[in-house]
Length: 276
Image (cartoon, rainbow, N blue to C red; front, side):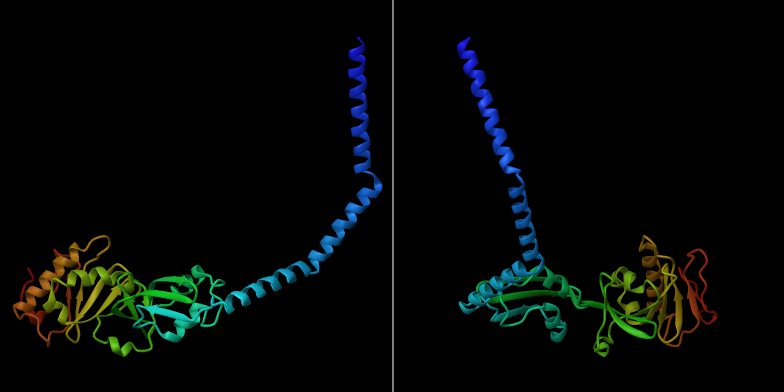
């Protein structure tokens, strides 16, 4: 019985002690002091002192590491043959003498890949002082005439602006909406018909569904729709190349040949032949 009383008394004393500590913790002077500290630190933060201090420390660290050699001294550019150097340098966002740690490689890669000529780019750094840029450039396969201007296009339909279009005058000339995106498959089929390809003057995309090709100077050949398949093109090109080999199509041929419907092929009267 006595032991139980002593235990109860001990518990009561501990409870009173906790209550006094809590009262002291949440007393007015303590709360007021806490509020003052919060206000002071908030004022320091909002005034920019901490940010300014962090900036000064960062700048000092950067200067120190640059002095011991961690600055860009060499920039290797690999794979550049057509990309204008001035445009590439502007996209790089860094230059010799810059701190090598502060460069965002992902941002540099994204900016470089926005250049027309660049298909893909890899940007790496080698400590303490070297950056390397590896370019994969686009290969133009055709000239695209759009709104009285000329552009280059690659196999993926990407459009490339160039100030030296005349250097690519030997490429096939195409025009019309969708021509840039569909010329690759058409040229792939044409590889099997070299005699025909040599005589194509230009190709016009019609309603983004089919092609008209201009043979020689003014002979128009209306090709069938090629949506989803190249079989129809293959058949049409076979027919045309056969006529060329039989010398039934010549430089003087004019008018048009309509191959849009295989069962109903229309040819100029002066050909005096049937396409089989």
